[in-house]
Amino acid sequence: MRGIGILVAATLLLAGCAGQSGAIAAGAAATVGDMRISQEDLNSQVTAVLIAQQRPVDSQDAALTGEVLSFLITNDLVDRLAQREGVTVTQGEIDLVLLGYDGDVGGRSEVERIFAERNVAPSQIEAFVKTNLLAKRLSQVIAPGVKADEQNAVLIASLAQISDSVGTQVSPRYGTWDAQRLSVGPIPDDLSVPAP
Image: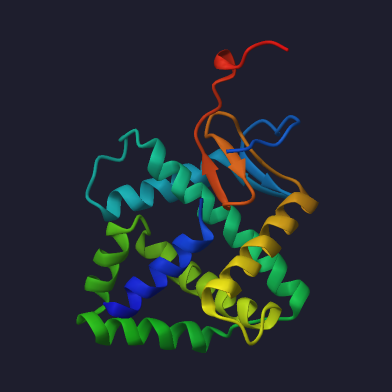
């Protein structure tokens, strides 16, 4: 359980209201460069979390939706940075982490319960672990020999740079993308902005 807590804490360091200008394609919840996250994919991921939490699948939870969308975007950005830096993880390494979690908390069903409490569905755990393993390796590659918090800061800055360079956009119905915090912020309130 301690390992899962550390993993979740590490991911939260990656996550966090500035919007991107320009239109987003119809039916897209977000785009990262040429990669499109459809509203259907996002809804499916959110539904999986609600089922894991034993909540009604028609629950309206903007915070959960924003958190899931933030992870999907950040996952793509981590993959892009890993490809650029030549950093990989194997399925065996992912499996080893999962086996360690099973041993720490007494089995996979308990691992799934703990992750569900943190808004990660069973079907998303493997991707979550992969992203965290990649993020840990990347921070060591791009900021070697410095403290962990400094490595995290360099990693976040590198991911934000990729986000800006490829163009990350979120549909206004879900919020705004903050590249510096790697998270979806609140839905824009254009009516409260005074005219220039």
